[in-house]
Structure formats: C-alpha cells, structure tokens
Image (cartoon, rainbow, N blue to C red):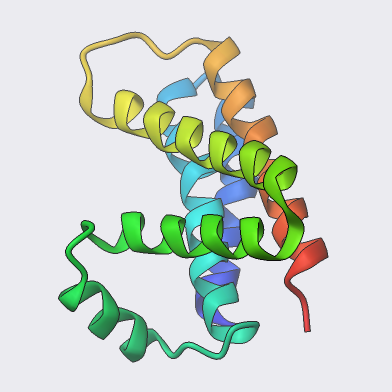
Length: 136
C-alpha cells in the first residue's frame, strides 16, 4: 500500500479516536488530512501524476500552494466527469473541511463535538466518493 494512502487511513481512524477521547480540535485536523492525502494519492494512482510532477505543477501555479492545487484539480475533475450537482456537493464539503481545519489549527476558538463530528462525517463522505468514483 502507498505510504500516503496509509497515512490517509490512519488519519480517518485517528479522527474517530480523538473524538472518542474528547480531543475535538485535533480530530478536525485528522479528518481534513485524511481527504487531502487521499486526493494526492488518487492523483498519482488514478490520474497517473507522479508526486514529483505534482510538486512541479504546484511550483509554477499562480493559484496558491499544494492544498489549493489539489483541491482545484479534484473539483475540476468532479465537475467535468460527474456534473454540476456532484461538483457542488464535493466542493462544498472540501471547502468546509479546509475551513474547519484552519479554524481548528489557527484560531483562538473552541472546537465543539458538533464541529468535529461534522468534519468526520464530511471526511467519510468525501473519501467514499473518491474511492467509489476514482478507482482503478
């Protein structure tokens, strides 16, 4: 198994363990990264883009860093392949997960069980969508 895919699996499992231990802020971080890592892995395994190629594309991109590039790539593929409805749902969940993670990691705010469980639910839905629609 790819190490990146394995990390993605670890992070989704860790998110649930952290929620069970009332560690809500780090659970949000793990929920988001489980999706981000799975998207990067899928760009390699399904779309044939090597990690070196991804790094090169990010370095010449004017749209932001790796997170922005990977998210934009997936949003574009979902819209092109599966249509507006899937794109709207997928892109909203990824956007919300990223915002939840940034708030959890960087802001002086309390992260509640509601936000952490919503992040975990979105992460599970995003992961299921990717695994169902972008498999070889």
